[in-house]
Length: 125
Image (cartoon, rainbow, N blue to C red):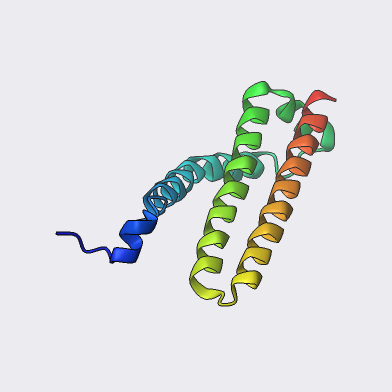
């Protein structure tokens, strides 16, 4: 005995099978952001009064540059996931929901790319 409607059985529609993955990825990115943000805040506290050359030297370290790029990519991806949930749950007209999803994904991707290029430009000289 199935709880699906006959129409859903004919169409082959069931659960989306995407919500659990989305939920897990959002949790994993939030857990990954905790140590990354702590590292970044502590680093900025240590170098809060440093000049540009000192920060450039700090960012020239591949570990620091890699961690900062990882922080940026993870933060923007986490923001994309969170905004997607908000739009899917609270925005009612379908066309507006999809428009907001596309615009948000584009803007966050663009900001992530610009941020990554900026970090690499400073890190590599």
